[in-house]
Length: 277
Image (cartoon, rainbow, N blue to C red; front, side):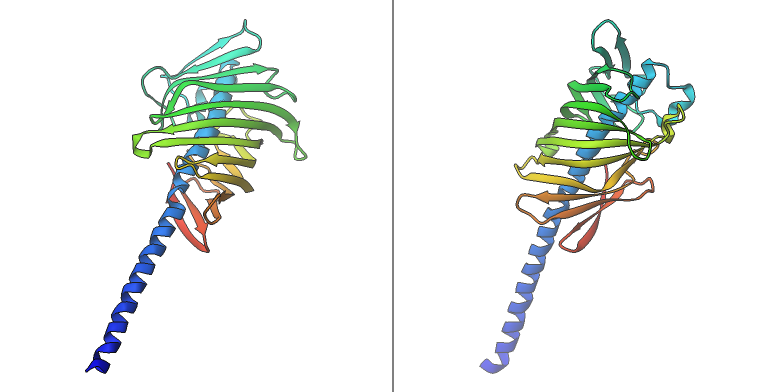
């Protein structure tokens, strides 16, 4: 009788161990990709600061036309003012004290201030951007950015060096601070020859590092340029290598150029789809 019951006991034990191991693997996998939407959200928030600053700059100098509506981020609830007396000159984008629904579907409030010297398209021109009580979808975004026009690259495209430092203070649902530092170049790939914002396309290259709300430090390397089409709310292509301090490397892929809100994450040889915000 003992011989007859021995194999079922081993089989049951094996099944239990397999289930536990599978649950642990699924839990680890979920943990490995759970922060990717957060990283992609931060990437989008900080990139859109440049898009807003560029739009405001073009607006005060009359470069935007009424037919540009498809490419705009700012709506009528955002007020743009230009101080021509101060040196350097100052442009203020004021979203007000209550949430302003912008054309990318995000709510903003507070102010973005842009001080600049030189013409936007001139080599050596500099632009400094910082925030005052600025919120995106109720997440506070504190940042400083320095943009330096590097002139035209070997392809004849205008390029900027952008050094960014910032913090996102997430709402109670995602409690914690997300800090950011990056040094990147932004190449104006398409759309320079027109005054229409919707046909502008930028390529972003460079590196950065972040500290997530749980205290984990992460380094980031753009291994294939991130493409931003101003006609799309999300990045449409590009690959980022993300290396956490104590977890496996993951590869974030924004896609093949199509405008959609999905990206993929590959970790430990497994690829998963995430939804961008």
